[in-house]
Length: 142
Image (cartoon, rainbow, N blue to C red):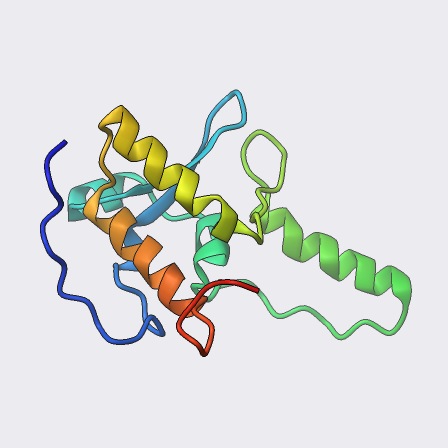
């Protein structure tokens, strides 16, 4: 396996290491969720970013303001109005696994063993994730 080129990283992971407007979530017919980074303006123009993409990337959504609910039914309606924008074409709502820390080692080992290196943008965002979840003592344990 070829070695990775060194990266010039910021000292903090507070800001994105990649351009979040270029990430797209693809949901396959069998339910696989994969993120894709678009490298050119043409690719970005051909594959518009959805509200679902923006939501999971933390990009502000351009949605109308919802009225303040005065009862449970109005609150439920507001929830419906908001979450319908996050629904994918096949009808489900993608979710985040809040515990990827335990998944990263397997992902890295699997990448190495199979000879399938990460794209630069994937490497950068994995490193940023680790930066943002580092404990005060410099480790990642509980």
